[in-house]
Length: 371
Image (cartoon, rainbow, N blue to C red; front, top):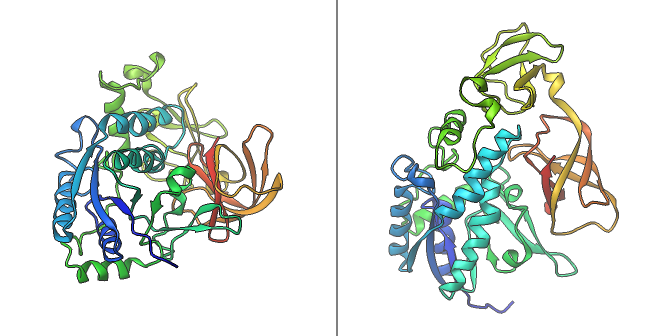
């Protein structure tokens, strides 16, 4: 295959994966630049969260890597867009008793689509990221996302909302390699981030305390998302009860809980308890046993297809959380475009607000949001 030199802008977090992405593309002969997306909302993360992609250390490390590679570097300020599409979305979903995935929302609106627009303004033809996923074309030339070679690091799940324009102008150079190999390459390139640990927390919640973050968001005068009037002040407290109606305790706001949650319930019982339902209208958190969180049925809306099956009913493997092991299911495309799914075996905590992503082998067929 003839090599085609491209002008590619790499989204650089200051971590080892995106740094090696830039180094590999330059080594291949492309004209490469790097840019970090500044996303810290209202400066809440600027001084606190130095490990995540929006922190100052991330900017400094990305700039250092670009200096080492001899490529230009920019910082894009997407704070306003990030606040709207990620932080406000995160807060509003919890009020609806849904469990959001802010990383997917960021990928859909910020890290790819908006980044590509800004890259083109700078004269770049394409963009690249350090995600562990691969791009492939089927026999008809349709491009799709596929699982990365490192099963433990695969990120195909969080890329399901990408539109076709993004896919046609995207490079994912590290998707065919393992994390161990990437760190070895970082050492070979003498990059300062070669031993930098991976960041696990949500970038705009450095403490990982979702409840405290949401309390602050709902109380802030600047926030676009507010608690409804009937839950203001002390009224946000409510009861925690079993499915049979037994009251076990009280909560400090139903939005502190997610479906399937086991830890931090603050109630005693003779069996291990899990959150099985959240009822905003009555301000109740419903708990039950492990058996009570098992289910087989789901519906997903706002479907994004890469490879839409010809039949209205088809078999696929479905993943319903980032760390969920994809499982076989029968899927039916409904007349309104939603997808109804039935797992062959019961699954834990099928959760509204999370994504359901459909696979045929390693290929992502598409995905949507669980209703």
